[in-house]
Image (cartoon, helix red, strand yellow):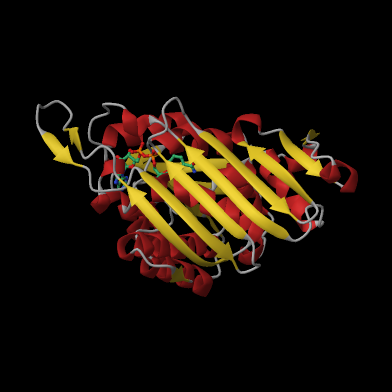
Length: 349
Ligand SMILES: NC(=O)c1ccc[n+]([C@@H]2O[C@H](COP(=O)([O-])OP(=O)(O)OC[C@H]3O[C@@H](n4cnc5c(N)ncnc54)[C@H](O)[C@@H]3O)[C@@H](O)[C@H]2O)c1
């Protein structure tokens, strides 16, 4: 295969800002069509993607304009149907995070993809921050020793604004609030660096309970969390303390995660994605000295080029990460968090 033909399902914010430009820059990707429930959005994306066709019915486009793969960027409630339609057509599938609304949906998607042997991909974007890859490398080579803590914070501030009602504030469309939107990224980073979570307890809170329906004076109920706090333990025995929120004043998109082990520590900060703050080695640890470690060219990967590369290189689906299996792992943790936040009890995974 010389080139990859891709169809796009759901062509809003992230697809126009990241999926289409990064895949166009790849050089061996052709967009066959763009589908969106809003025809004007689909047409705009098709122009951006140099795709000859746009429409509102992705099933008809899959049938009439065959592709090798699709990339999906709809709101969460529409992921399952779009993924299953693509799998039914036998194509490779990239689907945005969080993969599904429930564990049952995510399991069905992962099982069907495995049965068909196609490549899957979930854009947990922060896996592709160079500093996150350097962190993974340090942990894998034992530079931090046995891990004791992953202490992570992901803050945005848009929940404090008078932003009108959007799908992100509606459980029926988004499934959850800060948990799925931001927490899923933190959970995915925890998995990347520390592996599976064994048990956890969680608390969620909604600070702003209603928002104006755009263009009217009427208010609508917010029925998702603005903030989620988790403490827990990994299968490795390391402890985790995670916080994801839309209600941190002055925060646009800020992440800071400190990973600590018996031999050293490292701090990832997405605002400084080309370096880690580290305290490594006996001499530095004994003196509580911290310094800066810069990433190298090998840590730079363009997220949305990993998927077409994997197709062109005919990689085994299990070797393409993060895939639907990772999406399913994250979904299991999200569901455990909701269960704990509702019951007030610790939950084992
Ligand atoms: N990886 C990341 O860092 C990141 C960042 C932002 C958003 N996301 C994820 O991307 C997805 C989309 O988010 P967004 O911010 O781009 O949303 P958006 O609202 O800007 O775009 C969603 C698009 O999907 C369309 N749509 C809705 N239902 C559809 C359906 N059934 N079929 C076809 N099209 C449909 C809408 O018309 C809209 O154009 C979500 O899963 C979100 O969590 C990921």
